[in-house]
Amino acid sequence: MKTWNRNINVPNGLTVLRIVLIVPLVVFFLQDKILEAMICLILSGLSDMFDGMIARRFNQFTELGKMLDPVADKLTQGAIVVCLAVRVPVLIPLLSIFIVKELLMLIAGAYMVLKVKKRPSASKWYGKLATAVFYFSVTLLVALKGIWQIESFPLTVALLSVTAALMLYALYGYFQLFQQTLRSQDPKDTIDLKADLRGVSAQEHNPEK
Image 1 (cartoon, rainbow, N blue to C red):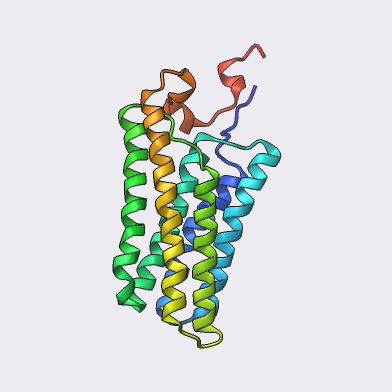
Image 2: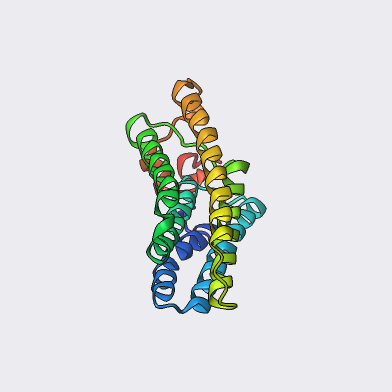
């Protein structure tokens, strides 16, 4: 029976699209083409929302998708943070908190997969909430500046402070999960990266079924 790679699906395609959108998002933002940058940001946010919905609806979860999704989020958010830091240098200390948090999570995830061969935790509600608030805050700030020519430093600091607080809370939550997974002896918490990336159907491993 012919097998197929389960990694080739719509949710993973949307995740890849989110990564691709980073380039025009940064270019438009730095060229002060705010409307175009907003469109890229909205498309990125919609793809982040729909990839999870489609994966749940059609049971298209894959290990590759679980790893790519947070990477796409972090790359997108990191690009936006850099753009904001370029435009509003006074916010660099606050934005640095965000960058450190994301780097720590990437390093921890890579350590678990490559070194101890443990499965990283899937996204939790507090991580999704932090991401949603991040997109809302940035979209609002970009819209105020690009469409209505409104720049409010107190509002900018307030929005980014709330976002940073949620990010730190999410970091704490994921750190707790990281420790639990490292201590876990449950086979379901282990991962075979090569086999998962092959992404073939179960029939390949169980041809009699």
